[in-house]
Length: 62
Image (cartoon, rainbow, N blue to C red; front, side, top):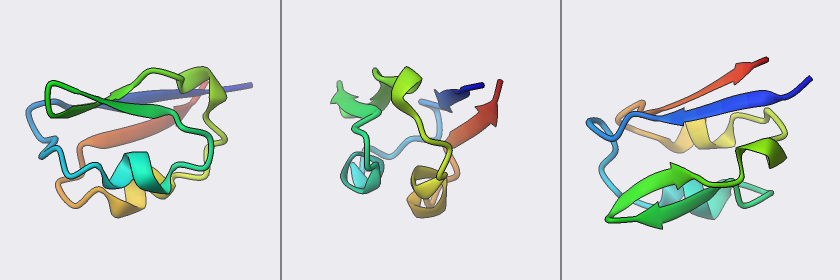
């Protein structure tokens, strides 16, 4: 069991809050947008979803 992490770049405002709150460094900023570069490390805690004001991040159990 794992998690799929997606960022809607149309909604992402580049605030970097997800990069700061993620306990396992799933996200990296690229071109002022958040990119889930280590999605396989996701714990499913959804801290990133909670801090994302524009609701650009989705975490789905797979």
